[in-house]
Image 1 (cartoon, one colour):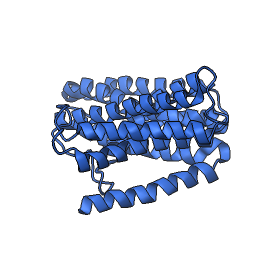
Image 2 (image 1 turned 135 degrees about the vertical axis):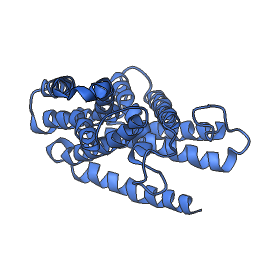
Image 3 (image 1 turned 120 degrees about the vertical axis):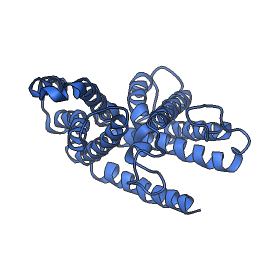
Image 4 (image 1 turned 30 degrees about the vertical axis):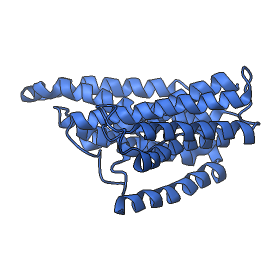
Length: 284
């Protein structure tokens, strides 16, 4: 019961907060939204590094936070401050070079950890930050506030509806996916249905932002909701695999009722590039 109350309170607080930030703080191409993405990416990378360190990874908390923030920070410099788009690959190349060259001066007795350090560093830089950077790119769309909110609600409703339907009707249909045996058929159906309804509603109520150029807009909205829901579900399952591999239940304990930051953004991170690409294809 305590966890249920925590999840409901988190939903009630988070949804209005995100809406306020996206709708009322569009300054400098949604710099406030980008800042939130940077912070979440850094915290998620720290938790991911902790998982890797249980399997011979060798990335410190400070280094993981910096590496995780680099991708979205570089994208923010491009989007909000007008710097060249080449800043993004340039920053990533500099980080790659640091991971490689920093090991040149490592004491010989620590060479055994050098390969683990390099690989782990690459991993925490890419996930979740590189995936989350696609949210920042959404500010280039004409109706960016509606596009970003559409993405947020598709993913959040997918997660919330899946959890609620699983709680109510998933008792006898769990265990279909070994990576996350608590997931149920009812939960998946509820999550996909919720996302499809959000996509459909976006096309119906906000045609200025969700009018398709290649398909009937309502059909395009259904496709956007369904495919984004699939990506979000796979992101959640992928993180479940990583947690099981590192023998932990939650990626952290920072968010009451959810666990860690990575537990909360795993679906968002995986769905962001899918939603971005699909929106461009269907509605531009």
